[in-house]
Image (cartoon, rainbow, N blue to C red):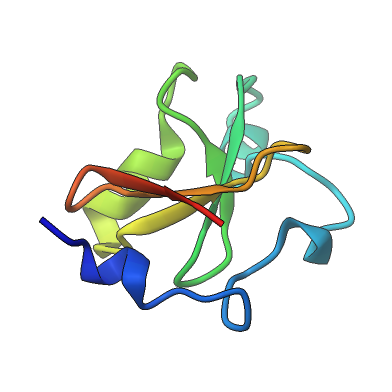
Amino acid sequence: MTCQHLNNLTLENLISKAAYPVFRCEECIKINSRWVHLRICQTCGKMLCCDSSNHQHARRHYEATNHAVVSSAELGEQWLWCFADEQGKDY
């Protein structure tokens, strides 16, 4: 099965981690919590914590908004993940 969410993203329309001067989970900051890894929503640009983090804000954001694709915000990583189709892709 091919994921159209991932196929619609190109290097030209990808929200790059280079656009962020500070790396932090916006929602964890609000509740004074910590995160493990960070993800960037490729629909709205929110930076949120991963599924390994206690609050899984990136997944909860997808569930609330249907923004399906996130990218890794971790330095040295260049991949995308689609929550809707449970598929990943390197870029």
